Image (cartoon, rainbow, N blue to C red; front, side, top):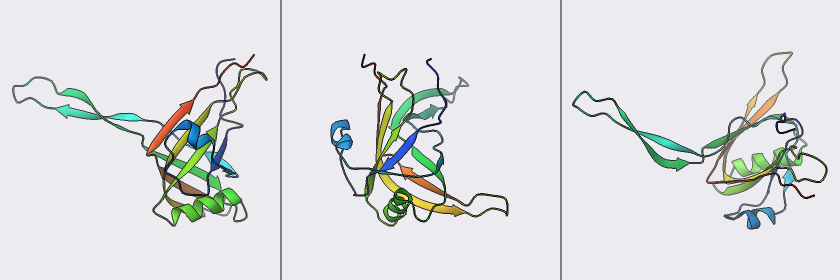
Length: 157
């Protein structure tokens, strides 16, 4: 099957700041699993829209501007004992960049690999959402993405 749910996806952080900028360097790092991740939202690069409005009444023109890797919003059920969440909170207290690895459970069969996405950037914060009496207490981490690279699932056979 070519489509999948997000269930089974895992997110990891390298607890050491890094400037690694290749997939081979990022894949060689040691990562810690971030537990109880609920949602990663929308991630990936997108070019900026650069509009131009001519004075002569012509329609607005849109040009493709600079590439922006964006930011990743990682929402977790708050677990004060989870090593990955602790590493994220620690990273949020610095100005340095950290690598994260997202492994999707999307291999076509047992002979194939799962897709993996490597990102790197500063962890901007780890806000807490307490909510109401029937809500799960959560942490929302924001990571600025200065590096973004997807490694697609491959057939090993």
